Image (cartoon, rainbow, N blue to C red; front, side, top):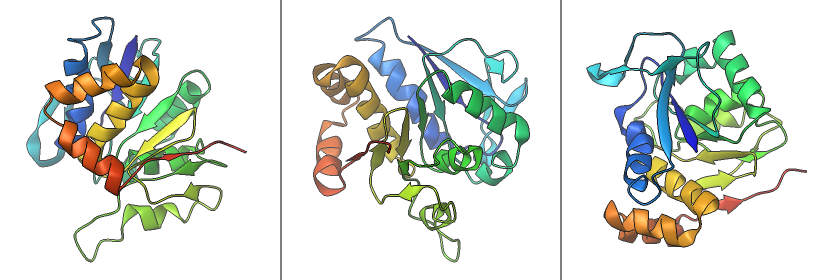
Length: 208
């Protein structure tokens, strides 16, 4: 099963925990494969200087089983990039799409959240407007304040470190609760995950 992690200039490095969780999960399910995809070939310059060379650009990306869209302060540029939005729409017609943090804002701009419940990052440094509030500008999106929202064909995760919870939820959905729990154990996140599930639970939503 091939997971594609979509990155771009300005992604917050913590959102690459998506890759990290999948990397650890491979120790349990070796059939998991992971690649990175960027709008253009070459180096993606992440926030504060981390350089990542993507495996593919959006024109050469292989067939995927899951596409994960990461977030970062430059989500605004990606939400206005026609090639990125078309790439997401095209893949959404074929496979489940997952966003973490402000990656959800890019999904909203692409239109694939229309008619669906969704969430995104809540907490910001003032006076910045919280992305969750900005998501409400998309009238056809049913905005939820939750750690993640599973709307079936699309899963949107909350902010920053909640990308770990989103990936564990995805593993649970794809491979079962025991595999997800074992992944949480080996990344030493089981207590944090349990606390988040209790105090800031996910929303399991269905489309109309």
